[in-house]
Image 1 (cartoon, one colour):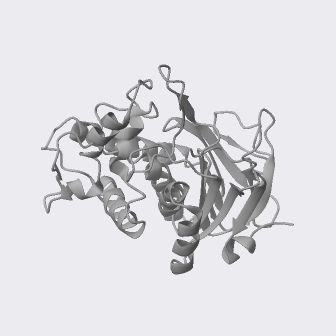
Image 2 (cartoon, rainbow, N blue to C red; image 1 turned 180 degrees about the vertical axis):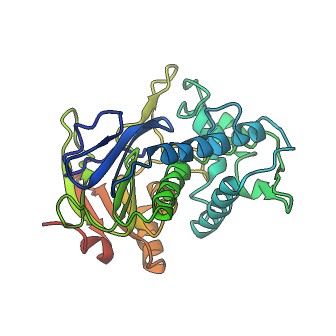
Image 3 (cartoon, rainbow, N blue to C red; image 1 turned 45 degrees about the horizontal axis):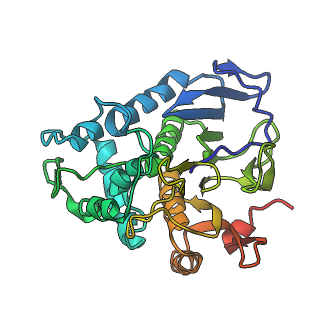
Length: 334
């Protein structure tokens, strides 16, 4: 689950209306893509209208909750849809990360997500190994083909594409590009807990300071880390809130589905925060690392030095532990 992070920036009192503060920052906030957003940037012009158009573009292209979107049409068998540049970019990036992670990141896992009750198709119903094996027959990114005419071909018409584990990050990247195109040099964008920071916080004159939730918290929200974020993107994924209980068997399921086994991941990893060049990449890798074994994540990060991560997990004795790459350690505040 991508969960909200709290900022040490006094932005919690924002309403859902645009407003310019008494400082140099303009602040926009509201709801989009099924979650909340907060955007802060310097300058003397409000770009909220242009930013909202980004949400509309992504929804129309990739929202599985919108029947009229391109992805929804493709999912129900419309083979005439010519995908736009946004769908194409996310498709190609997803394919690359699917390859890099050896299939642990797989946007076709949607039918399994739906079967466990985490998708747009409703509540969890009884599921057994026979059902899982049947669904796995049409899960796999290799079952998709992007033609030269920008049409998605599916080997099996039942294959369901779901970019929710990368689309929020990609949306943030588009929001950043919108501000970049208007020569905004300093901003912080947050959407459903995913983050993109550029420049400095002009209210303080320092780097943007953000927080990472403690995954062991119950009712009272508290931070486990504060970090400085500059010219970087971060996404966090965790298992500790979004769960389902099978009403027939009483089985408790977490939402990180292993595309290879077809079952929810049983893991000692509670959350993963990822730093990457783009938020789309951070979003997708954070999802993959929640499914990988911890040792696999360590090895992957040793081989991919442009990505950094902060992993919170429980050891064999039940104690809370953490592991940080060297790059992530450098941005943690004491």
